[in-house]
Image (cartoon, rainbow, N blue to C red):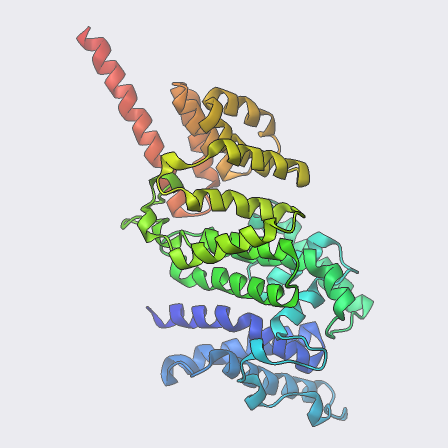
Length: 424
């Protein structure tokens, strides 16, 4: 691993904890961000020479705090500094934050930061976008991809959200129990998107992006500790565990994508699967179904199938139908079409997704599925057009390589048909 790679990984992993602590110190979003960025620049200069610190997050918090205090002094030399008991010392920064209780019995600086970003004064889309940018440090391009919107549109959304937070004078304090419950849905959605960003990667980036998946699972577990009887948080945690359990089998030795039905299931993490299945069963016993529980139930059906042919596709289609009612979305319908293809054939699935093309015109997976269905129906030229569009929209090299494999197969089949006609 190169110096820049391990430094980037360490910084991205430490960012949520460091940003949460710095915001607690300065009570100002811009000041916290500036302090963190300055600490990162100093890390790039210091760490390659001196080696990694024992606790990168504590190092960034300490250096960022000192940098922020220096900036305050420069901007207002006559302004008094905060009282010492209003800011923590380095020893406090190095404690296990997940186990520390603050005055409101709130366990984690990161979760506090999430709840602040998900303030009800902001529209839901802005809440999640600004949290992804501030808490996890995702680029505007990455967030735009998660929301299926253009990069410039997402930039404007984040800028408006930050301006609104500043103009509204949103207090950077720990929300009380009632407020936490009201903001839970937005926080859960943000955790889900963090996981998806880490999960949607190629094999070369997987080691560096894995901390995002692990961070999302950690945050989901912390949410579950705060909301122990909430079935949707059980479902969210179960979903993330069941998805991440398959990570070791998602790519082959050449870095190519391995589809679910072709994965070596012995590589799946049984420990994660068992924990996820237990949470699914516990959530469903509450008989208060929600979107995360339904998605977790779908993942559980895949996890319980010892072989691909054991998968209960009829039940999966029913669950996707339920999810469509709860959370109407062209992406949900697209996923349901995969199950329909297994149950009723590619023609029925193709008829289901064709009306979605305009809304999913920039979505890689739509054209990948469309090409696959057309290929099954023997409509090779139409399949090639769909696959070409999918390659143009691919988010990773592995996605593009997977589609090229299908095109190569089409070319071989075409050559075989020409040879057969010549022989006749």
